[in-house]
Length: 327
Image (cartoon, rainbow, N blue to C red; front, side, top):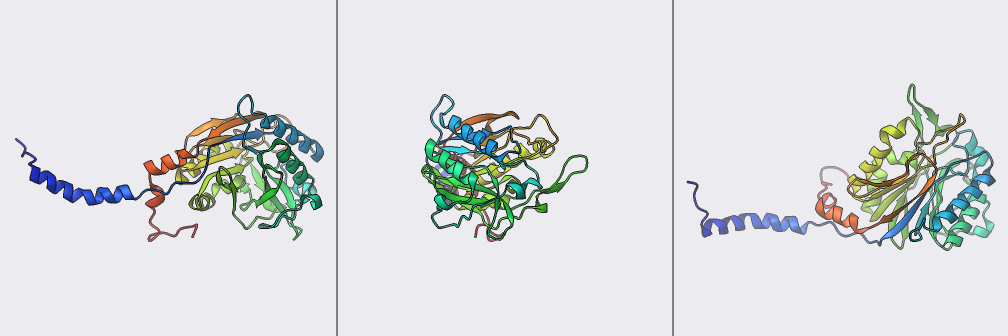
């Protein structure tokens, strides 16, 4: 028969293991600061060569999204990448607008030269919502062209402008060749927006493939990364879901993707669609298909804290072995 566990043996085991158990229970991730919010993802379609028509279509969609789709009014509305222009390198210079945003200063909308910024500001103010205005071609003070995402507060103020950092230059034999660098320049800054429901990282499309951006945002307290994006029908089926789930589970926060609807005719760029939300455990909790539509999703920020408490990688990293990209 096996030996009996006497009280002295049990006490010895408790003494041996309790320090390690205490150490493990003490290493908990600090909670993120945030509040529940409702997001509306506007998967726009029907982009034409006429900028005014594209802006009018976007404004109407924002107004529709602000009604809540039969539910509560959203706190945040997101538009897709390059919604005011055809997605083509030759089009970007033609449609580019001077925005002249300077971080840390109050943006003067009355003096803005950007037609798109003015329309989006008015729409955000009229709806009383936070608005991530997808992205638009921007002409910088250096006369270079950027793919830039403006963020507006509910009073219509332009509070952030993210310039796409990583340019979409790919060549897949038998698939797609596209080189944004033919006319675009990459941005040099990471973007975090502080909102009443928490810090949010902003990036654009191809930025998703570079995990360092999401890592930096997560370690600086962000509850989510939001990517206006326009994957194509070659890379979309392969990587759209995979990459957003990877960024979400690696960083244990929400990843929110907003794509244009897929064009059904013409020879232009065909976006993949499938705008959606992935939770901190890497599960896609809501997603559209390829057609035009609006997706409403309620975000519970406490899911971030639950994920990090259950799998506490945020406090288990070994920066004595490898570098911290956010340092």
